[in-house]
Length: 233
Length: 198
Image (tube, rainbow over all chains, first blue to last red; front, side, top):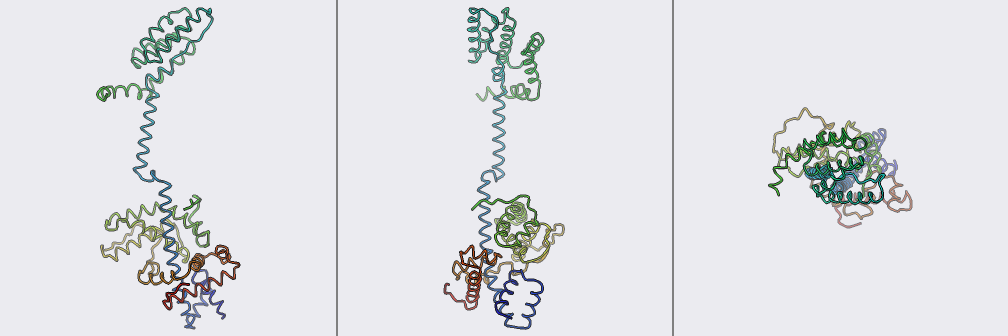
């Protein structure tokens, strides 16, 4: 057998790619010819030396993969990191939601602006200025003053304007006293007596305060924290 | 290190096929396979080691060693593998039990309920024997960098075409000749214990 063919056969034997027939043939050669057996054993030793280096390099590669994976995941890879993230997110969401659903914020979101309709120019200017002053007082959070300014507007003959003023008074009262039972009664009677878009708004608001979300952010929140808040301050 | 793009839907059979194919396909599959089951294996090894505080911090090494043995087994053995994660964990467990036995810290009690797809005893050849290995490593390190690279590519089952391409050699015959020369030199170093560089 030629040296090159034998060398190729031994290579295949070491790499594990040899066919069963060739393997049987080589093993027979090894058994009958000691020089072939020596050659194979020398090659096996050299092969093992390369294998060791390959294993060492693979181990290095695995360590690098670990580090890479750790870097990519970073803070969130640890349980405490993930827990911190969840707690902070929940706290932020709660903070934003309680700001959005605070009584004052609900009142401010729901006030109605002045809309001119069928008035003379003089009356219109007077009305406009009265509405503006009332609304500014509301925005400055001077709710009592806003109520005083809206009251005369609620007595006017223009029913549409009067209803809007009454609605804004209700919102100012909401900002001052919160959704108390008396305020809810006022809202319900307003919804019953007033036709149009404001009725829908009134029912929506009433529905919100009756809902679990509304109760959580208004009644329960206030009841729970009302005793703590003064002490904290 | 470059970020790997591993397909998450690959099955164990696909990894087996790719690793057995050798070359660059195997390199990529090995990295992806490692990343896929690493966490599961590591948490199992940590759990196993937690009962033996004297081995604290050994889990990472155990995972690496078991993975290397698994890859070699896949390459050179035709053994049927049902689950690669189970295979990996099984090897890791075996190595750990061998370590315990070596240290004679405990009397082993056979764990009959759990089966991991690897029930054979670990052959001595795949477990490190430090003194003998040092000699082999030193012989390999006496080779020049190009020789080392060629032999590593060859053992990783790169074709001669790929080796010629990677090593910027003119043709396949040149690659084959260089591999032959390098291998012969390695055998010489091993035989004579010569300390001269290539």
